[in-house]
Amino acid sequence: MKTNGMLDNLDFTSFPNLTTFNLTNNSFFGSIPSSIGSLSKLTFLDLSNNFFEGIIPLAIGRLKELKCTSLQHNKLNGTVPYEIGDLQKFSCPNAETLLILIYQKIALRVEF
Image (cartoon, rainbow, N blue to C red; front, side, top):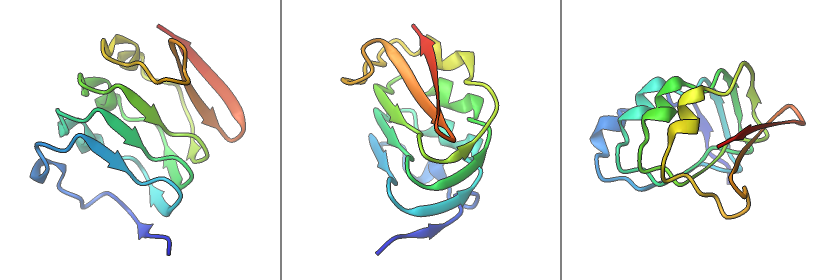
């Protein structure tokens, strides 16, 4: 069963010790809220295969513990925030020093 809805009303500050946030293969929609940046201990973020739209929030660049993220197969647009390139611990096993984001079947790569 797939879960759907929006993340706008989710109070991310209620999860100060969250290290993994995986919503892959669901039917979430709307924007990715900038309040996601309050998950200061987050190491893994997977929002792939949903219907998120809009831009990637700059707040993802504040997730200093983030090691891997997957945002592909959504309806995201705009540019990849340069702050993501400053994440010192980012090292997705399959990315080989590249952050790979897919926007409507177009691969966008940011080198670190």
